[in-house]
View 1 (cartoon, rainbow, N blue to C red):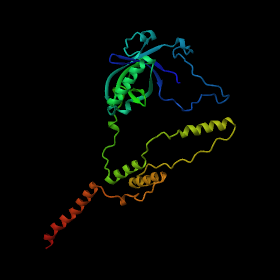
View 2: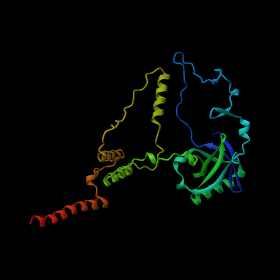
View 3: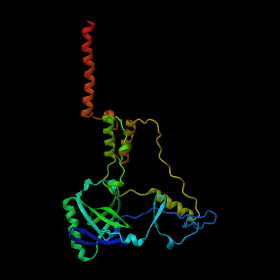
View 4: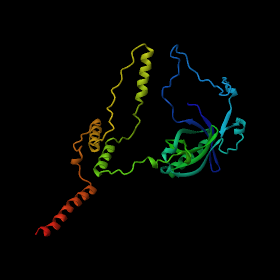
Length: 300
């Protein structure tokens, strides 16, 4: 069983649920030490004071906040005395519809486990209430010297805590959206066709191919063997003008072929026109007819 990273309680109105917190994810990436290339020795970080250029011990290091040209020193004891009601509790503040939460605000995830038999019944009560109401709980809690915003939801038979960004920590994407782009109805429909051909019920089969290749490289070098050759990279598209419809048609065909499906109607020309496209075509055909009718009296 993994080690609990925090213990406290969920505060649900006047109900208190003792819980232990476990990380819901784990970092599987490969990390490297920094070494001296000449002799392979580890290269360490040293804490050096910029005033006297001396190396200082961790016991001599404190906290300071830069305010103008002044450094304001703050001790750990002073930080511990700051009143923080959520110091040992995940305090539920409100319940909201699950689809009202912007995924951009969601950060790390943790599993909450009932701490002892006394917590079992209120834990299950909260879990089933969340499931039946189809809502999620917005909560506040304090970790690592700061108050945080959290989201409680149900995953299988467990309650999950997602740490969240505060509203003022999320940047607006308004200035990043491209403007003045005209899309053809056929292009939009073909993009939807591509999405349909790439739709899957689960993403559990995806693997970190880079990590696997890195493990092979390390294993080969550890055994004194030549590292594996580079894998064939996919062709990168240039920065020029791209025939969007041709790219969409080719993408749909490739996606269907990878699934063993036929794509007899892979091109847009064989697709049934949408109502919107048919209406536009009819309008275009009607316009020349009206102009021809007006010209006849002038020529007569």
